Length: 115
Length: 114
Image 1 (cartoon, helix red, strand yellow):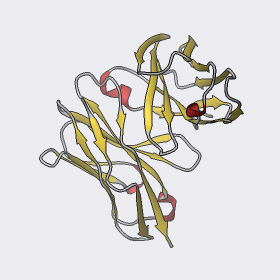
Image 2 (tube, chains in turn blue, orange; image 1 turned 90 degrees about the vertical axis):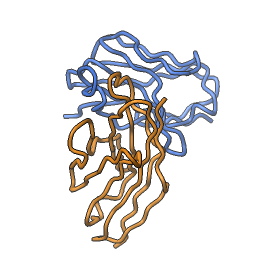
Image 3 (cartoon, rainbow over the protein chains, first blue to last red; image 1 turned 90 degrees about the horizontal axis):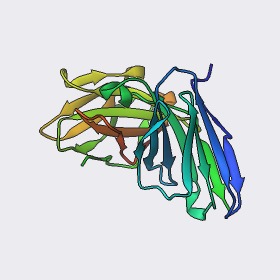
Image 4 (cartoon, chains in turn brown, blue; image 1 turned 30 degrees about the horizontal axis):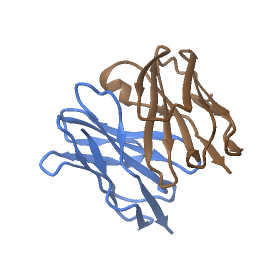
């Protein structure tokens, strides 16, 4: 059984389009995250949700909007896609407070290519 | 503010040789330290973590890391490399107390030569 799943795995689209990436976790975790990994493999957190509430919102363009319909899902919607948005986007989840939150479980990633 | 530096974006070792991946951190408070591994086309997986107590921590797949406060380091080692260890390795830090978020290093690609 997949613990953290993301769809789609690959996404190729043109500049200016709007797209969404979906994430689901079946671990019963209360916190979910979105990370962006650029072409140099640098990994940076974008958002974090705890029990459907936004708790971390790093410096990310307003074109990126996370939505959490329930604790098990955290979707990422991107408006007006730009070339610089091309990256691998990872969803992750964790449970609990403090240190336990740092033990994060990652999805397989979504490779977004903007042409 | 916290930060992580991984020395060497690419490391190659022969099968059976010692693996040493370097990580130095910066943190204004005692840190929590982590190593994650990313196999090709997969998400990250936790290898091991240091919180408090014993400075030598053991993880999965025979890896271990030692926290050295005086050197602000948390290097990852494995006595004998296996072909299946080929992957990207990320060191990460979180400030204890808040544990608000992880800050990752830029990663080290490990290649294991036959």
